[in-house]
Image (cartoon, rainbow, N blue to C red; front, side, top):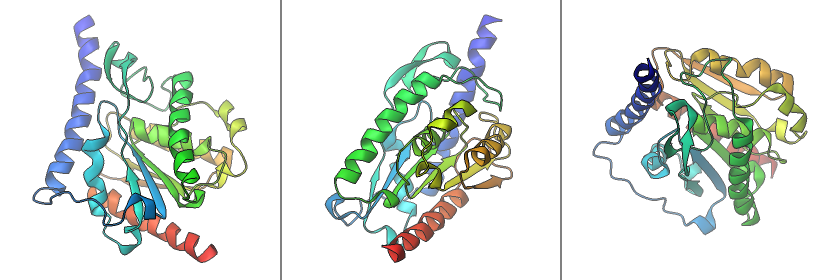
Length: 258
């Protein structure tokens, strides 16, 4: 019994990581990575990408090569890596993890480790604060993340004191209970959320994603929820193409109002 209990979450994690690697191998084959032509000092927009459990920032960097619209020519991207931490759902195994996860698969009723989530949020806020101090306007800051990174994206956006350009959650979940809503500022709840989730996700169940809708409605947050049939726990090209158009639309709105 102990062996089967240990194997299940590790197998689920391995499947999730394999899905991500297969996605990049398919979409970025024979497409050499090249950095943006503009320097970070000239950036007008900042996109922070937060990876999933056990993954790394550099492994996700090819994502930005899909964003070919000219609006992204002055965009600074950052793909940080989570620190190594013991993870409860994998029986204390140390791996790259933004915060602790108590069980896999994640359902709408899975327990959260709110204290470690809030510590991770502080680190994300420090990154955002640095970019804003460097001259990027809050409305031009976008936080995006997959799986655990998606849950951290949601928490970081909702607990940031200013209105940001947007938060994009891929296959994520709400990592705290509704009592945290009282901590959201009136400016924070103005930040729009894009939520993308595969209906066939067996690691972060679709029901866990759907549970975000009543939570965000209660908080007064605008959320566009997109369900993807036949998609498991991975990111699809279709999702990223929509993310590009979603951010681009908000870039244009920000430019016209400034």
